[in-house]
Image 1 (cartoon, rainbow, N blue to C red):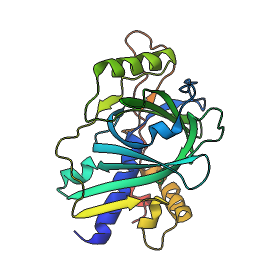
Image 2 (image 1 turned 180 degrees about the horizontal axis):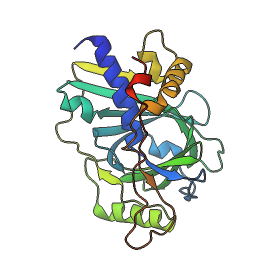
Image 3 (image 1 turned 60 degrees about the vertical axis):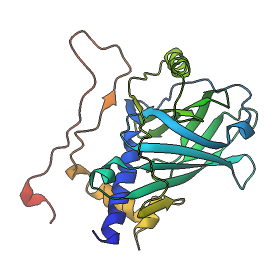
Image 4 (image 1 turned 45 degrees about the horizontal axis):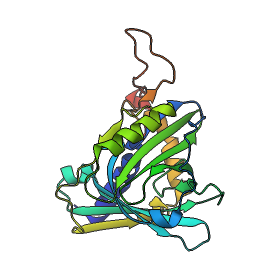
Length: 263
């Protein structure tokens, strides 16, 4: 496999990996989850193991939080092994670095983040529970069109976490009316520090594509969007499901006749 082909796989896996880490919901209004009171930003810096996260099958997720170069900012670097590339037998590691902005220093637990792999811009990033030394819980929400996406991440300073902390986080989510059935456990077995291929994205993801900037990628994606099968897209209803019916389902994009498709 050529180096350029690997880069294309990284782009695809990076975008899909981020998308799979969320649940999609109707409406632009994000749940009002309460921020952790009087958060001490200095105490949350350092390395964290991501042990539970919404709707993801990637492995070995870790966050490293550091102080940013600008006032009232942090940096978060997420390292992971992409399950898609693991399946293909690619010995790799993947990392992305994003900036966290603390817009209101009086409520430091409410931040804003822009992941390099995001096509929807900045997202809300709320630390809603932590004891600093054992665990931390983060709620993310971003908006796109008439939809919004949610993600919950439960982190630990160690490779494991006490069940009582997970139960506490779930209770807080239930209080905020945020469903947590999409929480997946992250596997940290057989994690590697480095691989034969190591990618680190700390700017726009599309810097991995020579000669292609973000505007061009957006144009290309929107140009062919009707031809994509988005059958894996799942929208979660906010209402109560009638007996025997479910609002969880798929949206299928009808492909145009083959004679009208571009080659």
